[in-house]
Image (cartoon, rainbow, N blue to C red; front, top):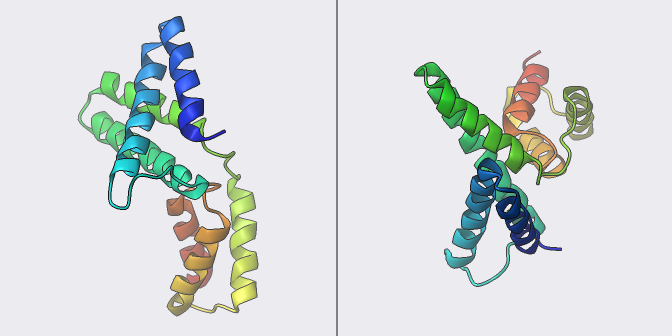
Length: 150
């Protein structure tokens, strides 16, 4: 079942239960998917990988907004953004733990025989492909830096 058809069912359920926060989050996902379809090279349903990227981008936007709102003392708005990020995250595949991501990174570094920061691009390229949708890019980058700089 595609994300869009699943979303329509979820939106109906949220409307019936009058869950405004969930409804707002689901509509944001639907808008992003529709924008993707009508954008450059549009007219097609996004692939699974594209759907994951859309969802990750939405979660990242919500987390960054929440952080800014907390800094400005607007906890009410920050809590709303954080709650939306959590709802949107529920559509993503289960995230790996930090330890699991760390194991993947060390295996990739061993596999590519990377030694030093000059090989960061090679390791990051492979790591982001293998861990796509399963871990945040920020975590992957920090672990790669940690292991390549030591």
